[in-house]
Length: 201
Length: 201
DNA sequence: TGCAAACTTTCAACTAGTGAAAACAATAAA
DNA sequence: TTTATTGTTTTCACTAGTTGAAAGTTTGCA
Image (cartoon, rainbow over all chains, first blue to last red; front, side, top):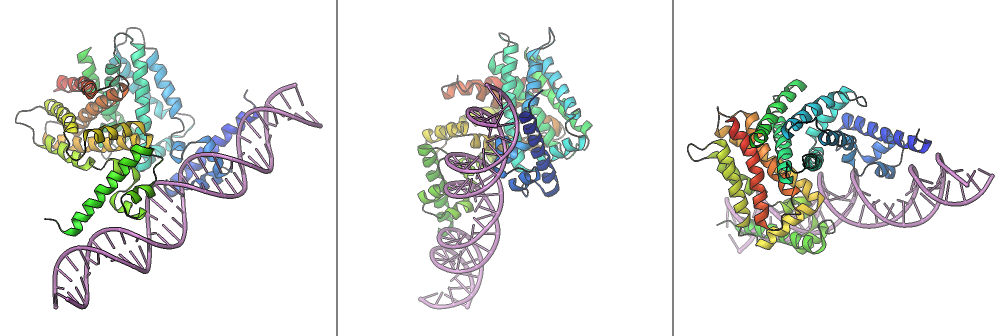
């Protein structure tokens, strides 16, 4: 389908991602230099920056894609579904999706999560990314329920949902050893936020 | 009271803050270099880093103080106050406090807010700071209502509250011209989150 | 085959941030 | 008031992320 040029670019991109994640795992994030990442992917340091805007960005390479999926979900709810139900199913689906990715092995996904939770720089970036996602989802939700849901309400709903899940999961990180436990924490926190929406209508 | 050494340090700190904020205002955040900030405060560039860990940190110089105030509030609720009521009054107080600071003029405060909302780097830092604050407040709340409120519930409550307010305020930035309007947006968003808590008990 | 467009490399520069040792100033003890 | 001690700032040297520009390659297409 796509020409050689396009395929080559995808390969370079992949090579950069793999080189980076492997090095981060082996030596740590801060300890890995861009020069090393580039070398591992057989390109010049300068070239790294035509694929990613920053060192942090490699770690979040699939964010845009995930965002699109989530948006698509919110854009076309099953007929008759309330905003709260829709958001509730979004949480379920997102958690499920994390496990079921082909591109990355389960270990890769877990490694990446640990990396993000461990490295301050990446944590900060994650907060930014998540924030942007929420804004986008709030807008979509507002459009989906045009008339019924003001922008403030949509933003408050999405913000409350993500805010409670995020804080609860992180605050319980020490206690949550397995993915199941994390999943359970997330669900319980989500229900706190969703109860608010339901009680308002 | 404090010795000369201590007073001198406070003066240098102030000088750095003022030099930085003034330059950020005049030339923009990214355009201002640490060398210029230091020069404006009559110290060496290296000295900047014994006062602040990074360029971003100057802008958030009073964060720790604010955090302590908020924590203190959550630690000693009026007898018989529910968690939801307590958090509700926290929001009111925080919004009020922003306006009533002596150290900075009203313009300074507003300039700083605009700076933070405008500059990506500072936005990112704000998210991190706010996140840390939430974690601290959730722990305090959990301790205050020991037995009644699990850590997950406390985190979900605080996360939902801050999450909804934050997202609603930002999402409505364009529409919110005055502080009063922002305040109103915040209150409305907070009520969405608080309704959830109240409906659960 | 040959030209134009897309990509990569090389080179040079700038800035945030860090470590270490030398220089300097403040405090307290003699 | 001199001296020893301790805290603070400066100077110097260096690393690493990031950006711009120009030169060099590769690919797509006529």
